Length: 597
Image (cartoon, rainbow, N blue to C red):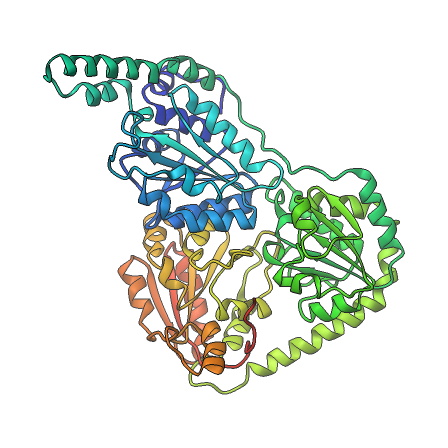
């Protein structure tokens, strides 16, 4: 934010507390505020718009928080959402928990009842702080207008500091509106005799206390420069050097990179620097979660299949931002004789289930850059035969998957569809996964084209992220082709956000894998329990729903329709229209036995 402001801007800055909040957002370079309107937060939305911040109003509070989550992942700057009091806050809880478990820095601004009415039964007044305490890194509650800028500033710092995560800032409504409006609220009722006179005197004093120091706070904010984002903490040099020494002596190393390594990748050229460092290491590498796409679509060191077999055969495993949770069978995927090096922002997470032989506390991305710099030049060539062995397994698995695409089904084989989609994905594309069986199948076939080009919920496995993630991806990367991969079950959570995309000119392309069921659950439930109860859906006409929301609906029933429909979807998106493809899927056994516990 410029330190020089015109007279109109200075006047506006002291009109109400909502502008103080918006001023901090502007200072931190926030260009999109995701929200669902409510009287408790209206001043923030109006002030944000006045300051040139796009207010993207969504159809569900969860989508607002999911969009803030995706924004943080793609830019490296905490995303921001605003929701009204009570049910607005409770509707955001699942998305907040998802961000906490995905270690995404975001700021949730929540409305609250007026300061004098708290706990007295006013509309939508609940104990929001207690509700969210275990779901965020920290909660804040403003008590006076002058608190607002400093409190929101601190919230940004807490969200990004150490292990990133969401924070919640509770903003009572009487701190956000102009003083004259609040005085009118509190002084509107006359009469009541002596008791009424004392009440009005008390309320007048209370309002004076609420707004004391407002002008000073506004003046200080007006002269503040643009905030500098906090980088994730770098690891110390000694453990990085010890890791390099162990890697130099390894014969069969394997590197696994997770989402946490991408915390700072959205800033400047950090992603490119990280990718170059990993390539320079030359270690066979598996990418997980948000790290998918880091090495592009054709890297020779990236392995995509048979990860457990590779980990069992390794003599050194390096986990960069990956805990030993269910995804690594609680550490049992790694051979007992293998040495384990782990880099993580969280010591607790780093030691979960299996303690590393060498711990490196700090940003896993910067750890890998330092590791590449510390490793002797050309050392990676030592592992060429080991890489070739793992690449051979990859090729065999790819051939098996390709052969499955030819299996006959009553509609479209999901593998055949994803192979066709992968063939037409542009280099500048973002893939958003929101579903179970259909999205998991996509992860076997689709090759994200570059860093920060794959978004999924993360370890919480939350359904419903799709609409918010996709619209935020298009806001952050307007030139990118954004593909949202929905299961027909998960689409029900956020299909209404096609309306948001249409209203805000965000032409995403969504594909709904329509097999008429919650297939990932049904596979095991029917076999084990002999009952499909609760897992059956209708093969609905989702393309017609999309049209009702202002998008364009397309339909694929046979494989021979895929190529032309994908081309039409891309054409429509380039013309500025959001598109939903209703893809009728045939039943397959591709992912049988895949439920995680």
